[in-house]
Image 1 (cartoon, rainbow, N blue to C red):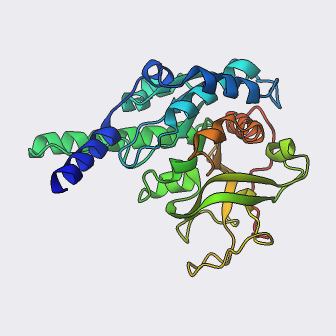
Image 2: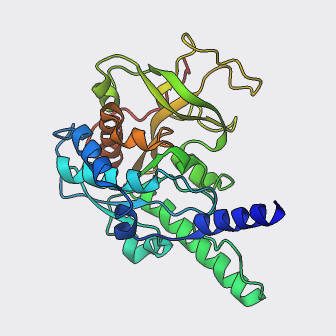
Length: 305
């Protein structure tokens, strides 16, 4: 039994640290799933792109690795291609965040990323190597902050908030820091802003989705800091938990950061999310907001109700 557990732990560690290219990931998506994605894609984007847009879909993991990453990457690439909203480049190579490469993009989508993305899973043991690795990490972190502040976009799906949870600038950009996932079930979702441009796809209604639902650290994901769009519907399920959130569990929001714009949606644990027509429309509207093509209110809600 001990040997089996050791082998399992080793397999998980390898899984979490493997870096895939876009082609390698896309090859993992079965033809029947591609058909489902294609059938779920919207025919057009909610806004016309102001210019040709280029988006980096980044899915590196330095922690837990979601099995839905391959389907998600393929779906979000197809979403931009079919609607003409953007052209996507997928990568798990963190050198894409060097300033000369990052400047080629209009937005970055953190697709189920986890952990400290720009730091090696194991730092070099020698002092010089460790120093160089940490200096590189700080440079890439600064590049991302400067990128968004300059007027570019940042978006995240699901565990995009289980990434750099102790880096304040990242939390401020993404809007929340993961603190648990007590719900993995069919959940009712409340449409908090029926008239908001990013929520137009819901026709003023809420929705039900089966997925893993996040809760966030208490000082993050606050309606006083974000424009809250979707949240768990407490009128249709019991949300009483002893975690200080006052029964308000947001799922989706938009915000601004410097001259840039950010969008986040916690849905995305399960493969099916990436071929759910309503979720894909919501994603696309959020991405276009982050790109600066879809005008929408990114000011704080100021109230969670």
